[in-house]
Image (cartoon, rainbow, N blue to C red; front, side, top):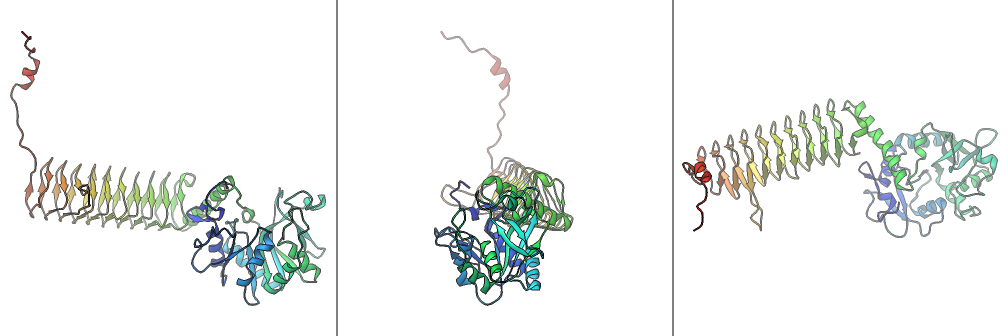
Length: 446
């Protein structure tokens, strides 16, 4: 990956790579989940709650990885083994594998698929009765014969084993291969030699095979994962106008009849209600949007817009911003850490920070809450049904009472009583004949 970040922690659609595999395992019904990591501790404290971390002391192959987890494998049940860098495996595939394995009574069951170009994948060698004879690795020259390389059926890297037979077989696996490693697939041959049956479940989805070893492959997997997320939302009643230009991360929730316009990016724990319009050219991160909300050409982060609210175009809602029902944040408006009341409008060119604004208020163009004195932040309180005129600056801490007004261009530093008009500006002075005076030539110096 050429990265300081461990491969398993590179994100795919908002979720670390390893968490995709863990989520599939849990959704499939796994009783416990064990992740095998390296001794550098890169995964320590980075896994989901309840997931055990086993350490593989040395990089001695997939079989060595399973042996490293042996102390976490309890009872006589089925053990599923999945490659951690193959995040496209699904819960449905794991359930199908577990069910097939249980029904067959085999010691091991592997998932296979057919590829037009199987280069680089382990080939599945079948017996005459259709069972699995062995899996031949092809990682290095010399691992497989020419006849074996001609086989189109490949190992998907997803297995089901009887726990006791798996651990016993791994103790007898050798390292006579091109890499000198303990191959998990070699355990299949050991089981067969001992008279146990090895079966295969063939699935049609080749994406189960896709591992990640560099950023090109990361991008390829991300595209497939994103397509799956888009399709799930669309089948649930969401319109995504242009999926190719839309990013929706895995934890985003969207209600039915919402329209996601092109070039929109929905990230983090964003939750969107029903009947909304989001986009085009909108980013929402950890935002909560109620039913019937419209957000156009805007950036909303860590905020909440309740039912019927409108945002944009070109608005910026920062963490802590709350727009109550039917409130509006219009063109070139920035709001942070503020409570905007029901039906209140902040139409354009305004900054509202650290403020509490009552319902039914209208803040005129270029209304500013001056919330920072150079040392500390202070709050502004604006009542219900207030009307501020254009270019009003409210210097916090200050309170504007219900039904109050401000004059255009005012810098308000004192509280405004309810129902009052605050005018805080210098008196206008008109100088007669000013233009004519400017046209007179300057007197010549003596």
